[in-house]
Image 1 (cartoon, rainbow, N blue to C red):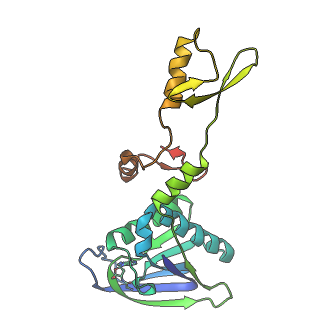
Image 2 (cartoon, rainbow, N blue to C red):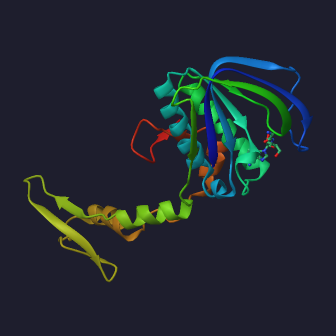
Image 3 (cartoon, rainbow, N blue to C red):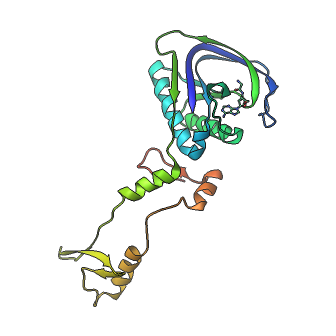
Length: 230
Ligand code: A3G
């Protein structure tokens, strides 16, 4: 994704003609936004690999600049002309909508200029050193992220006795070694379950997409990676 950030006294835009069939509806004519950070955004093909991370990385950059220039209002402006390798309109729009929602959740005022139009616009750049910035935002392939996680995850298992004695156990030839389970049949079943079955996630489970699409569950940014917010 490539973005151009302009800290502005005002932005005026007016959708003129639809550039694509799936252009969003717009009935309001000319729109004027005072005191804002305008984020001209071209979503790129590479962002399709991991749209969720593209949203996260986009809002991180935007928040970073908004904080530095002390802007409370953000205009997300689809601007295809910053790249030659554009994402499909569907994905581009969903990433912009995702960023809009997340920034709103963080109490920014967000105006999203309509997607899929040729628009007339006037922008008054403030002209201070941080008022014109550009950023290139990359994403990591989902499968690469999972691969990394797989490489980093290494589990060790121990059985602790009430008296504090502990035994490191491990799997060898599909048998658990390191503890005598002869008097602990149920514990053995439990340990087998924990150790035999691969607990490493190697593909994204299919329900994740559905849960996010239906907005039932998403990742909680305030916690360690991977924890859910319901
Ligand atoms: C304009 N200034 O750019 N990223 C951003 N916008 C996109 C993309 C993309 N990958 N694909 C389509 N119009 N659009 C006018 C939108 C955007 O509003 C663009 C219009 O569709 C035609 O490409």
